[in-house]
Length: 105
Figure: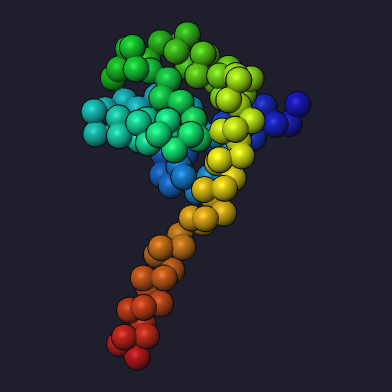
């Protein structure tokens, strides 16, 4: 049952590079975009659409259940891994730093 905990990533940054499906409960309106993005990318669920900016226990439970056991759970896991491989964490920063260092010599 180790995959129960591996399937949920509790990070707020770099959600697309985590490699595991996401369940988001964004607390503020400037974070709602992340909820939309995980659903648009097919890597998770925005769990608290009904109670935003707060969240209800049932919303989080339903989101977790859908990501772990729902009909698209396998597809979400596969897509999350694909995105993590395509956009590894910190790769953009490393490329930018390398380009700057090459420019300044």
